[in-house]
Amino acid sequence: MKILSYNINRSTQEKIDKIMQFNADVFILPEVACPSQVKVPEGYRMEWMGNYDFKGLGVIWKSGMKAEIPQWYNPRHQYFLPIIIENKLIMAAWPTRTDDNAPKDYPQIAMETLQEYAPYLKEFPTVISGDMNCYKGQAGETKQYGIEAIFSFLEGMGYVSAYHQKTGELLGEESRATYYHRFNENSPFFLDYTFSNIAIKSYALCEWDKEVSDHVAQMIEL
Image 1 (cartoon, rainbow, N blue to C red):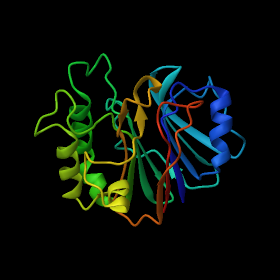
Image 2: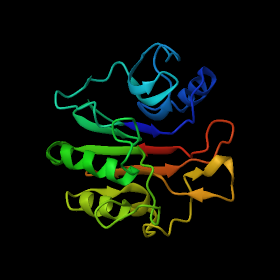
Image 3: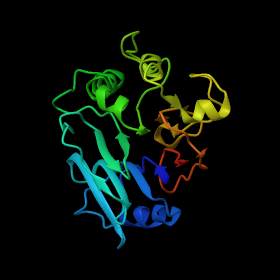
Image 4: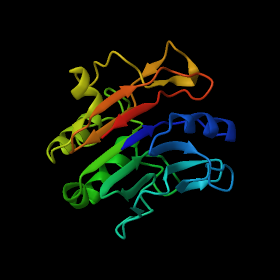
């Protein structure tokens, strides 16, 4: 299974058409528009959640694959979208502030969601991937809520970060960026992660394509 995980920065049909050329089996797309705004090619299905038609969290997959939304999915967790595809749990992630959770920082939103879903993260062979909106040293970070706490929590359940496992680099000392704030190459951050409790055949960060996004795509192969 090949997975492309990519925050595409307010999608257009042109962007969708371009990234579909990666020919992945599954696409995890933070900031993608809703299905009424963009169309996926024949042979693919799309599931989406969001408060605004122009920007939400979507997952696209090849329609020949066995897929279902689990009964325990809780849409109040914005935005985390679990889909069981070919007996693997694909957890698309884009913790986002909304009217319901506005006082909370991104790491708290992410941690509370992962804690609620923990029984299922233990039960299924799982890939968690997306734009986590979290980095070491960000404002509001605490021991309870922060990317270090998220790493520790997931590691305690047998998960590893694909990037850090592949490179051997430490959290907060990444040599690559996955996000360039306001498209400024002098303002790099590492916000996009893939965590898994199953073997990953290959993992790569793609080159930054300024024409598509301020983020960098992750390519994962199971």
